[in-house]
Length: 423
Image (cartoon, rainbow, N blue to C red; front, side):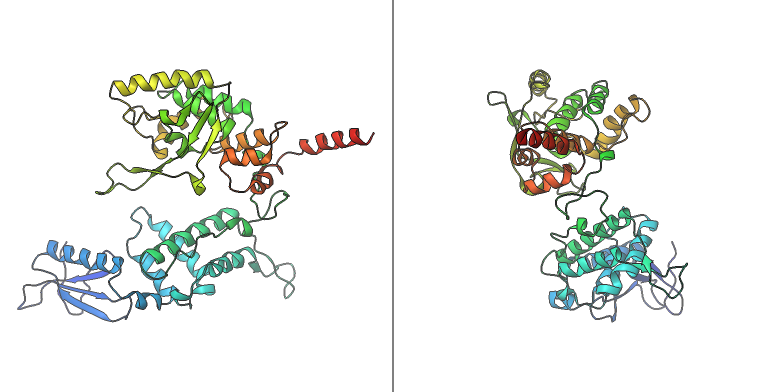
């Protein structure tokens, strides 16, 4: 690409931040111009004698701005509006499509900027992000049927609220990592407080799982049978475990031989498979992490799938001896490696769903965990505190509120027991 000379002609904009100009007459150096995000002043430097060299130096400038070369105090005193402008422009998200970047900017302009745009970054708190979500929840528009009268609710969709919460979390993390704030202000930001409730629960702040998102045990068994017909049949066993004791996908994918204690009849959930972007520091694209909420726990081995688990243990030993399953994983990929969920989704899960009759599994994989939670809570004799421990919830009240509002059978059962006690 030919780069124009300096003067009134427009230069090449490189990585949305630096403008390159061809050498002026009498000079052999390219020129690089950019705007300092802290001072707002234009800056200029030589960019080498070749276009490739100029672009390389432009990369250095962008990297320097991203890594926080300006003093932290200067960044902390920047307006939130200006910080977001840098965040949205500086090629932080190479996977963003142009449409998504426009949506990010639009959501910021409509919902975030009016609330916190004029605040300094050092003054931002979690309460400011909560104010943004509250403004979305309480948004109103004029009533077309009653001009001049009270306004009516705008009815922001739940999906829009979720995307806004995700955007706020990503932005807050970026602010903290780049020295604009001293902490991640999105930590502990609870979206459930601002979502419309679909059913009534004991805890008014707990997000309810509606019945339409909870499969039956028969549906889970059908999915497990379909998974056993694929190239990685051990995921049928994983489905039976997930639908009865509720481990998450990452926890299942990280289970190895050391996780199984047949003597005591328990599975130890002590780590999780975490996907990460591939880089020179991590060429594998994954790492071992702790389970969600850092809840290291044990779950029981049930008789319904214990024989299949014992058979799988023997298979894992043979795979490891043959050099195929390096980490001795119970549920690896076909090649015996840790199975990242995005790869598993297309290669294993979707194919199994397609084997079922149309409409046989209108759920996500995580619905197997919902099925386990609801089934355990409505099993006679199961205590809520034990169910919460098996699921890895830190608060049994959360488990109770999240799932007991789904079915009403326990009310009829309780009424019968109490009536019998009074008679």
